[in-house]
Amino acid sequence: MPKVIDILNNSSSAFASFELVPPLKGSDANRLYTSLRPIMELQPPFVNITCHRDEVQYTLNEDGTYTKLTLAKRPSTIAIVAAIMRKYNVEIVPHVICGGASKAKVESELLDLHFLGIENVMALRGDAMSGQRYFIPEADGFSHTSELVSMINNLNHGKYLDPTVAEPLPTDFSVGVAGYPEKHFEAANPETDIAHLKEKVEAGAEYIVTQMFFDNEYFYDFRERCRQAGITVPIIPGLKPISTARQLLLLPRTFHIDIPQPLVEAIRQAATPEAVYQVGAEWCIEQSRDLIAHGVPAIHYYTMGKADNILRIAKAVF
Image (tube, rainbow, N blue to C red):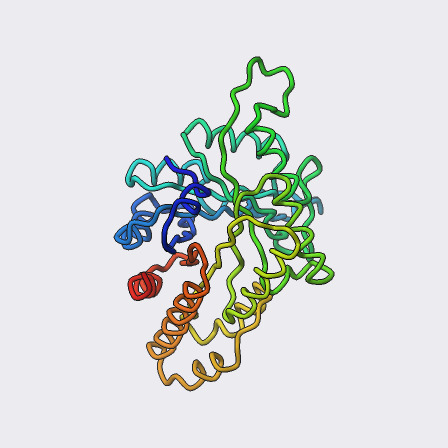
């Protein structure tokens, strides 16, 4: 199967890629296929699959002590990848995160993916655990994405955590990482944010996919600052259409992004939920067309588990 970096380097025109959220635990693969089926009509070169850390809950015992429960809300990454491979012939890019896992657990997941024939991964730190203000790594885990990328790079050279493994086979992963046109909310300033991104690239990341944004000028400025800093890998803009009026509040709060005033006003003037949906789709279509006119190699669409508007946007643009 092709690597994402090769797809990017060998494509003569911009293309669309998509990101899916796995279904919640308790459902079967058919729910996953229902989300994926309409996207597969567009024959994407690859599809990203998000990963969510386990949640931790504490229950109060009769003696006043607490019992810690670790709960997985969704099927494992390995299960999702295997289910898609069974049904579709598409390159899968699973997300691998630092949060909630030791280095050994992350390596084991990567080696399982390698065993399945997966050659592309998206390396991410992940969010803070629910109830925590800031990200706290596991005792024997990674604090930063650059550390995770370095480990993947070591695996690609046959260097495992366990030095006693006899004749360890090297993996062959192409690694993508995240970038933030409006700055990661934990970064002290834009310059520091770009410096951290460069560390990920120097550790072995081959391309960047950005956080969602709604003003293309943020992306163009971000891309220029990356180039000035010596970051030369492909940069793929990530987009998500607004689909409900409530997202005017939720998206800035959750993803620490701005929504341009013209879009805010257009959504507020929309008389029905259907009209809001239309406004969001049209804005994303215009964003996509402008980005392509400015030479982006691809556009990555965040479906958030719902593909109807994404399908319409992609068909209008590509």
